Length: 85
Image 1 (cartoon, helix red, strand yellow):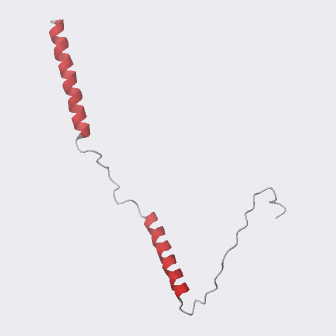
Image 2 (cartoon, one colour):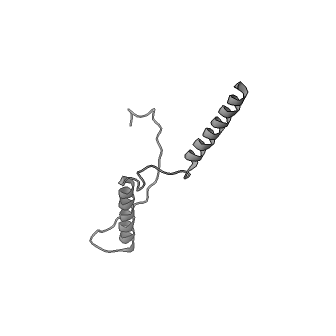
Image 3 (spheres, helix red, strand yellow):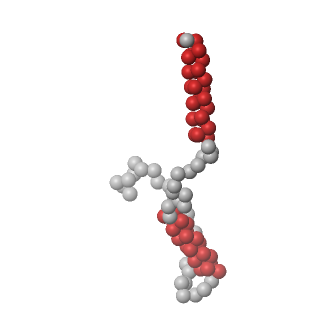
């Protein structure tokens, strides 16, 4: 502790319950459920997301935008073509 005296120390009182793993008790059953839930959560985090492929944000939005730009471009070309003739 002398080596770490510049570090911040936080005191906390912990409640400890001693359980006999050989005897079944409500506290032991609760602990087993909590451990099983924690293990399941860890396994779920390890799995890759189910939707690993490309996502469609809005179907047709890119194509629609491309069509609008093309139409504006063609309209501009047509107007410029009439002016320069």
